[in-house]
Each structure stands twice: as structure tokens, then as C-alpha cells.
Image (cartoon, rainbow, N blue to C red; front, side, top):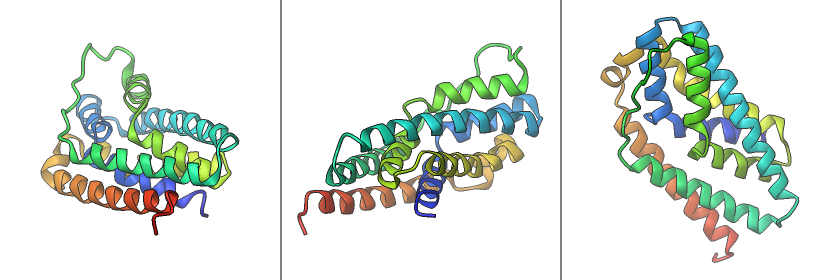
Length: 188
């Protein structure tokens, strides 16, 4: 459970009000079909989660636990700063000839690559000594955050206070990152 739950919660919080959630709302408004969108996004999230967890596991074999803790601190601080910065909503280019599934799969793979969720997943996978559980946790967290956007579409920003949720998550990530950094540097 320690390998599954932290990436799930971290990914869930990191995606609220993020560009991926806004993209999910745009794709839902454009295609209007939730199932192929969610399947494409799920496959993209799983691919990104597995890639991140694999990188984290590779790093874990090369560095000690204190360095892994510091890496986790940096990932949390990165996620916190990213959540506090204003988001530029994504735009949909092209005509979407690939359909809902392929459009969502491609768009999410590209948009999530190098995202804060990937860094969090890599750091948490390094700590967990597991590949599959952190990847599945992060995938589930991403899907739980984007599912409301797919189901209610572009109305998401009118229904939920996304900016407030992002600010709260950002502050939480910053606080956790500082605690992890203090622990890694043994300042307490």
C-alpha cells in the first residue's frame, strides 16, 4: 500500500486545474464521447507512469536513501511551484481526424511528458522499491482527476474552484517538499 497510495494522491492533487485536466475538458467538449477519451487518456497515463516508475527504479539502484529523499523533496517542490504558477489553457490544433481515442492518447502522451506528475512518480517509485504499484497509483490518480473534466466537459471551471484547489495543492506540495528536504539534509 505504501507503493500505491502516495503516487495516487500526489498525481490526483497535481492534476487538479493542470493543463491535462483542462485538455480533457476541451477534448470532451469537442468529441462528446467519454469512453474513448478516458481509454486513450488511461493508456497515455499508464505509459507515462510506467516510464516514470522505471526511471525512478533505475535511479534507486544508483543512489542512497538520503539522495532519494532529496530527489523526492525536489519533485514535491517542483510540483508545488508548478501548481502556484498560472496555467495557460491548452488549445486544440487541427481537425481531430484521429478521433476521440487517438486524439486523447496522443495529446496526453505529449502533454504529460516531463510534467510534474512524472517527476513525482519517479521519486516515489525510487522510494517504494517497486515499478508497477507506483505506476498504477499515478495512473489512477491522474484518471480520478481528469474523469470529472471528461464527464462535465468545459463546464468544469464553472463548477469547481480550480484555482483554489491548485493553490491548496501547491502549498501542500511545498510544505511536504520542505519537510523532505530537511529530512534528507538531516537539518533536524
